[in-house]
Image (cartoon, rainbow, N blue to C red; front, side, top):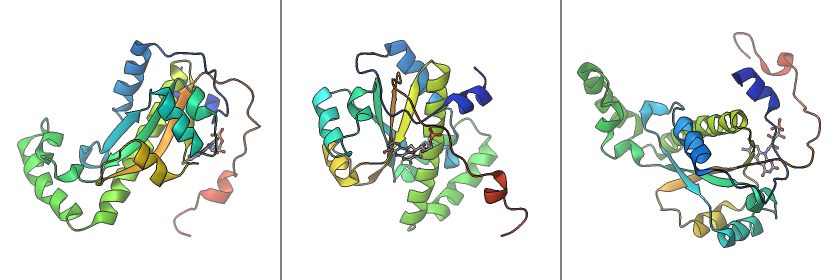
Length: 199
Ligand SMILES: Cc1cc2nc3c(=O)[nH]c(=O)nc-3n(C[C@H](O)[C@H](O)[C@H](O)COP(=O)(O)O)c2cc1C
């Protein structure tokens, strides 16, 4: 499947086959390739909680407006970010870059993030957005459907997954075999959202 087909076919699935199980190899291909998504400074802030325990799935569903995708998807991924990843031995993120690049980036990184928690959070969320889109396109390519989800109580889900203090939840993605229908697509025309040169 090429990228344009994957984009055109992807929809936010509203119901999944609860009996379908994803093969471990498919899960591995999905997650390993998703990590090829870009991230700011190659920090790879993402920490993805793969919720497998059915009781935990149900508990999350209870704080996610009862949405059935949470329990019925083959994979339920909670996309989290480590907000301090920028200062956790960051040299390793550019280990394959030329020495001159490494020497330039290390002080730049510190200057960019230190004492700026909002910047750290924004950067992490940007990276989670890109990871999530990669997951959804890969799911499509592997014959699956997906649904990005933020219709849930973030504090309650944080407690349920025992989210560390210095981490944040971006959103969840459910991946599975869609059953049922979705309504017709609805998008604003380009003229509404593409602005030439300035607002
Ligand atoms: C950040 C985010 C959160 C979303 N949360 C939910 C959700 O909780 N439940 C749901 O059914 N769809 C959710 N959606 C799906 C959107 O409603 C959907 O992408 C949008 O209506 C466009 O439809 P399409 O993806 O099928 O083209 C979410 C999408 C995004 C990007």
